[in-house]
Image 1 (cartoon, one colour):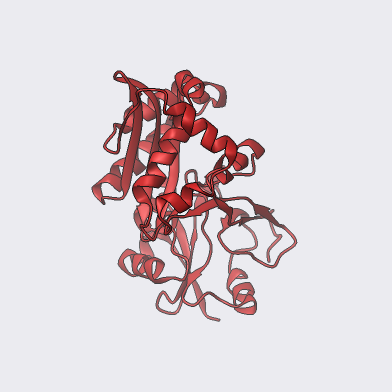
Image 2 (cartoon, rainbow, N blue to C red):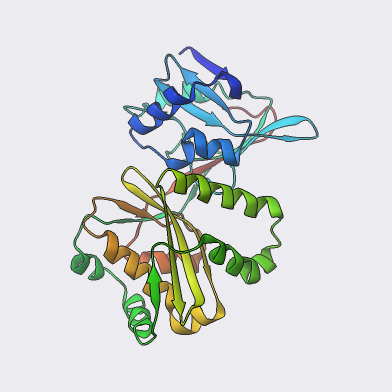
Length: 292
């Protein structure tokens, strides 16, 4: 298998995006504009004329390159159509340089002892809303009913800066994220909006922000990219109410709602409570000179 490793300036991004869109499992994280934001110097493994491709998000530490999963990018991997068989996949992955530390998330399994399965819940939105709601857990239904007691105002044209600021004021304080994290997020949203690929949902009470969700869309999938909840959201069950609204809006759309997680037991219970099914992805870690 003749596979080339290309530097960022050698990649034909038109062919790249066409290959991602035509692959058996296209992911928004692998589109060139997305990668340009989260990993500006990303490289690639490419077989023939973009028949089979893999992004290599490169990161440097003390001048040494590392292939690390970028923020806001849950899954990458090897993209082709049809998907490679196990033997071809192994041969392709052998072209990842053995002298570069690698820590990447694959949407597909890879036959290696250093692979860890990670949980990711996805909801098929092809059913009508009544049938979708029939798969909700009792606790989810109870929380939605509680939310119905509040006078929420929901819009799909919300301001993303309100969501980011709420996150900074709440969970962000605990996580102590740097300014680069928020700048990357804002740039992603702005670029997605330019491509009509962003849905910004906010939930308010009397013009007071309660909670919000940023969804990205690509082909048949909606990605639960970012969210934030205020203290008021917890007491009013605003987030379950908002997600139910989103599901109702997109029911019968022949799309999938990708919750982007999670191995966290509480989040897994929350997402599965809406009928989401676990579609795992796989983390592969390799120290220097480990290789496939």
